[in-house]
Length: 291
Image: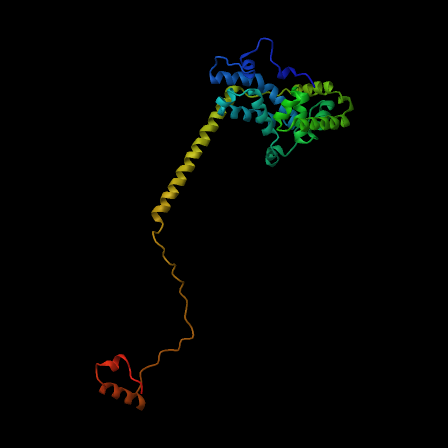
């Protein structure tokens, strides 16, 4: 097991952010507590996320998005046993999302590190499966122990250990000088520190989160009003009873033309005379008698 990196350990005199991450409750406003957590975690988290993605802009975007979600759910995050771990897990999920491959801005590769050794290490990390890379960064980069790494990657402890072993073997196969875990830990810290990655200011992140909340709230209200208006219009204009559809008109063919009136034949004249002589009323009119 590796020791925790300086980025993931608190100083001897804990700051408000360190006290917040260790479960203590400083007397701070929500904004002050959030800013303290951001100042404590964001710079190191951007560098860790860069090791996962190999993209500087995506690393900053993922960390910013994770803290925006944390500010939206701040009552829940502030009471969490490990607020820094909560934000880290969300940032890693955002960074490793497969949907980024469909975004035009992330289709072309970014400039690699200038140092050939750093470039080789980054290529070795990016060649690992996402779950192996995340386990390796958490264990050998951040310095979490195996149960914590398994919990954060949503895997069992044996599965996390198996991923870690295979990830180390894959890196050592490409870079034999990094077979020692301590050396790998040091080189990962050096790689992430040389990039000079900077996070946005905490006030910018909080403002962006609040604007996003306002936007989605207004969008939800507009959508609800649209549904209510459409439902009301349907109720007012819909028929209250079933009306059979009118069949479309079509020309009738094959009917003989009507014949004009002409002189009666002798048989027709005899029938007319017989009808005139018969009684105008009586049962014969209702029930004709057989001949």
